[in-house]
Amino acid sequence: MSLNKILVADDEESMRWVLSKALKRKGFSVDLAKDGDEALRMIQSSHYDMAILDIKMPGLSGLELLDQIRELKKELLVVIMTAEASMKNAVEAMKRGAYDYITKPFDLDVIDAIIEKIDKAREMTSQVSLLKEELKDRYQLEKTIIGNSQAMREIYKTIGKVAPSDITVLIQGESGTGKELIARAIHFNSKRLGKPFIAINCAAIPKELLESELFGFEKGAFTGAVERKLGKFEQANGGTIFLDEIGDMPLDLQAKILRVLQEKEVTRTGGNQSITVDTRIVAATNQDLEGSVREKTFREDLYYRLNVVPIHLVSLRERKEDIPLLVDYFLKKACSEMEISTKQCNQDALSLLSSYSWPGNVRELENTIKRAVILSSDPLLTVEDFSGLRPNIGTSSRNEDLSLEALVEMKLRSSLGNLDKMESGDLYGLILEQMERPLIRFVLEKTRGNQVKAAEILGINRNTLRKKIQELDIEVKKD
Image (cartoon, rainbow, N blue to C red; front, side, top):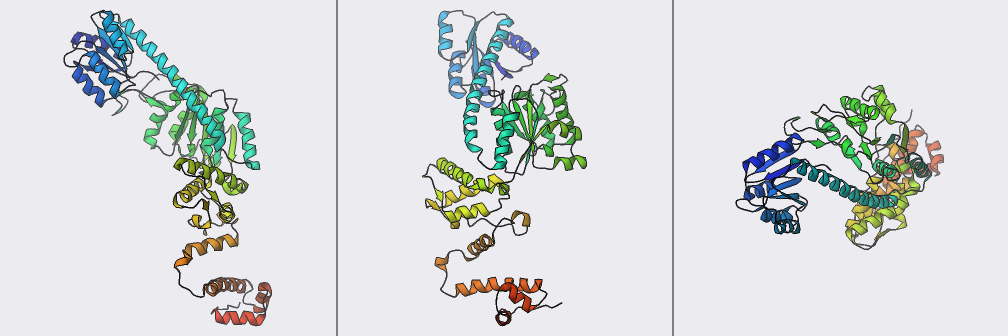
């Protein structure tokens, strides 16, 4: 990560002027302080990547200020300047945590060499830290992509085929199916492991800010641009950028993404210099991009550039055999995060979870499990712990796999609540009556009021049917 903002503190105005001119000419943002006290106030209120401090200043000395910095902002790199080339000063400065020490007068080349050395050291530290984090993430990732269904096995095969190359991948699927997990799996199994993986949600950032987030900006490019900022493509240089919800990207920005794919170059907002980037693009969407192309809301040329290798993630309701594995994983994860003993689901609860349509997919399942773990005090979760699940009655496509028994059970639990608090009564008769009325009404409607045929379908005597019609006050409409 390059240096951007530098503080120079010296009581000599000429030294401040010379260093400021030299550093600004090289593109750095520079603030100046005339003594140690002013420098301390600036460090407390602003962010700096580097501070160049004179050892002797009014108020706080350079060494005293260095002590304060080590307590306040350990990451700030400090270079000490002095006109006294004594071993004592040098040893003392380094002992207190200075990054380097220079003696006045000095050539500006000395400052350049120090900055170059700092840049290389920071880049190496950043890469080592990133590698550690990514290796940790990769280990976690192998445990979080759960599923042995045929659909998931096919996805694993595709990841294995595309990961080693730099080919562009488009991941499609409903919200909550785990598109970012697949993108990370592609990166962690590629030759780019150890380089950055940068994810950005194109739908979560206002369109007027998205361009500067992706491509960065130069100092002064717009109001508030007080210093240069690298965009996500530059931050991901050498690695992978994951463009989530790319279907929400504005058309004018789509053209610039197309240029990155074609030319491997970006230009910061407010800049006129093209910057070469080596960044692999993995995109994702929950939209029908082909339909968006037909509607002219998504560029056709960009679509074909992105859709080199498509990966389609099926919804959870299309791989229900994976639900028990996911439930087990999320139970262990939630209990581990809350530092409590692992809980389990009984068979009825697992059957309920497996029969539900999960419109929010894996994300909804995880949140449901987490909520049940938090609210239940028992080690064994039952159907009662998932009474918050509601079938989407108005959306038949999401409920076609729900059994009649599961629908009735969920309705009973939501309507009756706690049976312990209910008064004694003919609950059995009441429930049967509520079930009989819509059933008989439905069959009579389908048989157009033909009671003989309706009785045959119901498997009851015609006289019994006539009696039920009277008892339940059912209106019989005949064509």
